[in-house]
Image (tube, rainbow over all chains, first blue to last red; front, side, top):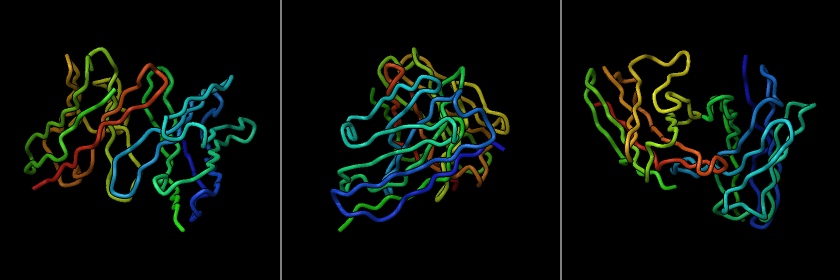
Length: 119
Length: 106
């Protein structure tokens, strides 16, 4: 079964750091570009970052540039999100999502992990 | 890119719901649609304007022309009540979502 499973969310103080993980299974991980999409409480979806497959290139939304880093370990079939200098407005459910090959939709999503930035 | 969706759409069971997504020259891009039910992750329901992933009912269809893409849900059921989001790629590197439309089944 094709599956993405996020972990690492929690409560962190403003200015703090957190690392999220997304474990992939059921497909050839390094063939796919992977993304992080977040959703603040009661709000819509916001694309945040992406990393390509084989030779990774990354792209960031302006809202997280310089603070968040996306990376992947293809040997472990795992996607990461390192979040530094966290702000209250980063409070959200963070989803990892696979970008389909051939097309470019987010065809597989994880269940999400909640990040709360609060003192 | 900025994608504009109506905040809400109401429809009676068995009728047709149309959800629009507006954007500059949107017809030249591939638009994808996601369904999100409360407390759940989004699910892809239409990709590349008008294709359906396996397992998505034929009642879900899409179109895209000019500056407007449309997701159409035919013969609406109570289980279709959800938030729906359109999405494109800006310059192929930055994802953009519409603000979402809440579909209420009366």
